[in-house]
Amino acid sequence: MIIEQKQHIDKILIPVLREVSDPEIPVLSILDMGVVRSAIIKNNKVEVKITPTYSGCPAMDVIGDDIKLALKEAGYEAEVQLVLSPAWTTDWITEAGRSALKKYGIAPPLEAEADKEALLGNKKIVNCTNCGSSNTKLVSQFGSTACKALFKCDDCLEPFDYFKCLK
Amino acid sequence: MENKDLVQYIYGIADNALILGQRLSELCGHGPNLETDIALTNISLDLFGQTRSYFQYAAQLLGEDKTEDDVAFLRTERQYKNVLLVEQPNTNFAYTIARQFLFDVFHLSLLENLQNSSDATLNAIAKKSIKEVSYHLRFSGDWVKRLGDGTEISKQKIQEAVNALWRYTDELFHLTEADKVAVEGRIGVDTSQLKDAYYEKVEELLQEATLTIPEEKYFQKGGKQGVHTEHMGYLLADMQYMQRAYPNMKW
Image (cartoon, rainbow over all chains, first blue to last red; front, side):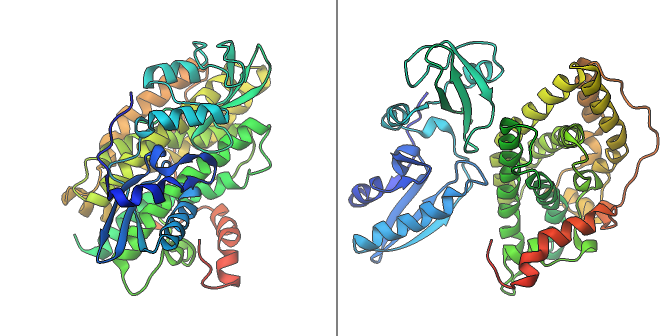
């Protein structure tokens, strides 16, 4: 399920922020990722609030710097604040974000129950991002980053990442 | 609740995440295979992330230009309030898994309660961390079962590890002075209330893993008062080295 976020972003800032991406997943804009909680212009200064996907996500510091840089190039001074509540969920990844993930080789998150079945290896329901087959298996619950698990396709034999459901 | 008491309460929670994270980070590049190596370091990263959130808050409460780095790296051994369990060494993979499992069961139930804290920041950190810790428990619990129900040697090793670490579990439920003040102020969690459910849950999984529940009656304590086992000094020497050698480095 994709939840429409309660984001408060000044329209004029959207094209600027759309260009900032997660350094670990360069095809995914931070807006499609759902980490920008608000971006408001106040007295010519932009106040941006972002929320981490995972507490220890090392990308957050980089994302904060990238936001400041992008806004600076657009002529704004920016202040970036990290907020924890409400906690990020994979439901906030937009439809565009999900298809960007898939194209990049990361299977988008399933629903919570299905995710559990997939990670426990009970059901073969994560489709290979390379050939589309569902004949896949879990290699590791943890992958190259905290948000992903590692899968392998038993048909085309390619390994691929799966973005874990987080609720 | 006064700031200084609240800071002590935060240490009691956050130091567990910091020290266990440090222990797990020792295995980065040294895990028994690639997948477990990545898993353990990912768990370590989650714990460091949670620690940062707590310590940024603690630094803010302390004032006087304190930073999260001061709080993490510039205290002395007695000032760390983590439980003895999390500082125990990575003797072998079975110890690492048993330590993780015995802590994860407690950690998850602590956070489930902390998310109702009247303190907005602790409340938010708990809600965020629960999602991560659920994964940790799934990982460690699966491995306890796998080792217990595995080969003769894997079973023997995990049983040995569970037996050796069992004596550190009771301390998880002791209340410090800071805990009592926090519980009264509806900020903190009364961990003594979590004890029965904890052992029930742990024992259920051990049985599923075909392991024997230890009959150890002696329980060691002290970490929450800052009296640590001999392993702690070595861990801190390693962890604090950079900050002490090159002061004012940032995390």
